[in-house]
Amino acid sequence: MTQNKTVPTRTREIHLASRPHGAPGPENFRLVHTDLPELAPGQVLVANTVMSVDPYMRGRMNDAKSYVPPFQVGAPLDGGAVGTVIASRSEEVPVGASVLHALGWREHAVLPAASVRAVDTSQVADSAYLGVLGMPGMTAYAGLLYAAEMVPGDVVFVSGAAGAVGSLVGQIARLSGASRVIGSAGSPEKVARLRELGFDAALNYRDGSLSEQLGAAAPDGIDVYFDNVGGDHLEAAITHLRTDGRVAMCGAISQYNATEPTCAPRNLALAIGKRLTLRGFIVGKYAEQVRPEFTARVGAWLTQGEIQWDETVRDGLQSAPQAFIDMLAGANTGKMLVRL
Image (cartoon, rainbow, N blue to C red; front, side, top):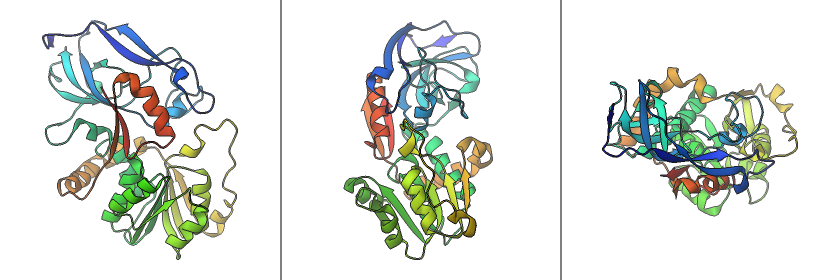
């Protein structure tokens, strides 16, 4: 085994203490000290440097069947993280390598070498692999261009447009030839940021009827709606989608903390006459197919300064639960991260 001079024998993790009912609170999380096991052949020990908190994690806190297994009460949570290998029993992944993996919510992770991906942090920050070059970036790219089948000339509307995914959707739409890009967000500061990112129109959904605002921003209608919010946003989009319009249903953050079933859009029948396509998707469907193209195009845009990405960063593992809670409440601009 190769290792740095000092390898810890104990670490800290965030466990799910109880399942939330409605919005999660600090009482649903527990900071736990635990022993690190000896590495088995083929394993690596990673000291995490940055971890992600994401909206999809809220669904995993419920004891319900979904496309990913639920978190278990009394066990550590997990999610995207980047770190440095500090001990290795693998010839393929040496000590000192920067790696991306799925065991966040802890300061150190023991993983099979086959389940980490080496990343180059000499050209971009480690956090980029949790944002613009990671799952949010891939979600934005594949959702817009593959799930929603955007083509040049389309008018595109994005909800949650100041978030990690939405802010990239808007920029990718502009760079891919959209004739007009419209975003919604929940504060004047976020609306101003969307304009800086090149959105043609930015709506504050707290400023009155979203449908009326969208109608004013797109008087001839929209062709594509990238949905991160659900609820009234989806309803407004259905009203203003043109014939053969497409919806990429990525998330429904307005409903994640609901304690009662939420009603479907009241105007859903419009989808019949308009011949709308409403397509739910998860990025895993497209990842292998799209990754080389995504890496090449988005990498070039980054190099050329065509894409910007925002981060909201909290410090220390102990801040991760509140970072997650705040992210669900919309406190972040861009990607919410925890620096370890």
